[in-house]
Length: 276
Length: 307
Image 1 (cartoon, rainbow over the protein chains, first blue to last red):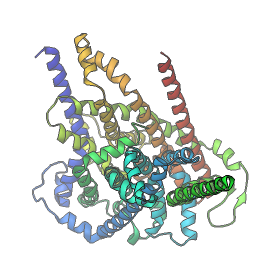
Image 2: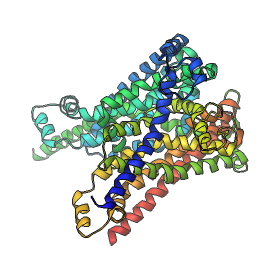
Image 3: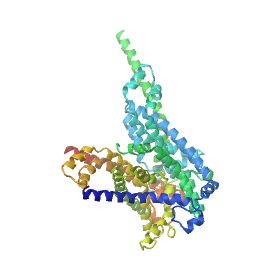
């Protein structure tokens, strides 16, 4: 090996290790603290493995109501994602496979949505939910969550749909299939990768959404995890291991999804920008 | 007879076009309705509200552009804008390069890449709230690991979140932690796309690693760098969660950004009219910066195309 290569290799490993500590240490701290008792934390806040490896914190976190936030987050995330997938697939079909005058302008209109700061719609949505009586219900979150997930979802779906060979569609047409049939029997089965990409991408973002939940939800019983966690912190900020346990638990679902479906997450992130 | 036939054909064609339009409309309708109700209408309403003095409940008083003139002489607005500018700079010049370095490390020939890949990416998966709370404890002046680490080197503990200058830096560091992995993913995707032959050819010509980086890697990454920058600029304007969680109400107006200032005016002080003005400004800035970046990039592409 040339000496230059050795230096290159060594500095590479040093870089890799530094980044590893930077990215990984906060996690390690979070997880290891959540397995400590209060006493252990105060005696030795930095030990990585505590003596007791207690699960008490996780139990007490659930006793204090974390499960409500969890259930709410699951409900609103699943509902929003399901609707986004269906609605954006519907819209993507004509946008990607039919010629009509408003095609391009409509497509651009949807894409522009990606750059809009949510704050620009916050007050009117708050007002609307009040007037319609949805304020302080999970249902109030559904509209904004679906709407702000649409642009990226339509973008991903149209890309996949335009790659489907015309022959498949033509064959179905010969058999007398209408557009709905073509959509449901030819297009949908052929964009499964796009669907799972859209599902996972939006799951992560809606699971973690904060601003709308902050503005539209007030009652503890209707809170999603992000505002629930904030509430938790406000009430029990002394109980550091307890909060760390709550943070760890709240992150588990998304991290699991990433480990199980890495490429889909990556695909979702890149399709939004590299080609765009 | 012939004319009659033609007319029937024409009728039929018209009917088909009408059918086609109806089909298109039906497929697009759900998305359009949601988009209209929760994005387009609210944005227009925000602009409309910005012309009123309004607390959100009582009567609206029309005051024309007064909110905008007030905003322009509101020192907190300028502070917030300045902080947003720091955010943009850190996003473009720290987060993006950080992501690039991570991507290069992950694509180089080292061991344990799979594990590194997952760990580097983890921060991006957590909610901003969870990240913010975690780092509040990381920065804790007494028991926080960061200060303990500094103490080892004889550096005195820093009260990270107490003074406004330090607080902004502290939050910016957390945002690098959170978002660098996002750019890492983008760069990884486009680095993989660079053909290996280009490097082999350069190797034969005797180009070293650094030369290869500047003459092959960087130019090939240009489109990704541009789109990352757009995302970084637009993302910076959208930032809210981290500042709200970590500093919410803590160090006052010096650490305000546009998002938190809009929230404070609208939902704490109930100046809904003024809050809408700030929100309108955020929208205009997001739109403007996107247009400017796209326009400059277009020019750049034209120039390199002409060569």
